[in-house]
Amino acid sequence: MIKPWTCLKSTEIFKTSFFRFRRDECELPDGRVMPNYYVMEFPDWVNVVPITDDGRMVLVEQYRHANGKTLLEIPGGSTNPPQNGEPQEDPKKAALRELLEETGYAPDDIRLLGVHAPNPAMQNNRMHTYIATGCKKVDEPDLDPFEDIRTVLMPVPEVIEKVLSGEINHSIVVASLFYALPTLGFHLPEKRP
Image 1 (cartoon, helix red, strand yellow):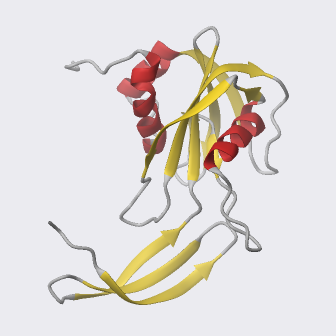
Image 2: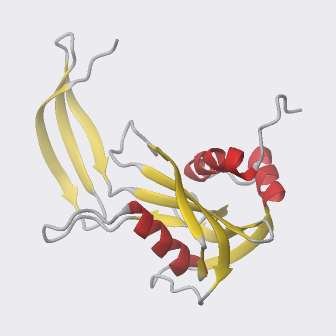
């Protein structure tokens, strides 16, 4: 079994209210020393797979500047980080908040499907994936000042096809949708052409 590394020294390089960037000096189990291992610390994130009573998924379309493309995704975002001695926001509460803020939809029921690591080589946070059923539009979206989001309703089979074709390719969205497949009654085909 591979043993964990020992952190000998950790130095903060940069910090904002959104994330922290640090450099660790680590000793490997065999005594080798990794002098510069870089880690980004983020609050935990949430994704929601929202389903309406008529079997459509509530998606969001938004421009992602880092890769210069407009992407079709599921609603999601960050939990509020710990502040003034308060703990990090409860992921379920954050999921409900993000769904309402980004789409104006609220569910009859929401439950956790799974928790995964968005990029464990460089990040320390987790992604909490929820499925929300009985979603209904209850309000208009309440977007952050620099968010431009369009809500899209799509039948679940069409969403799955867009994942399989590569049209939906945001990796944490794909991972979250993978968690939802059994609940939605879908199974991946044994063979793709």
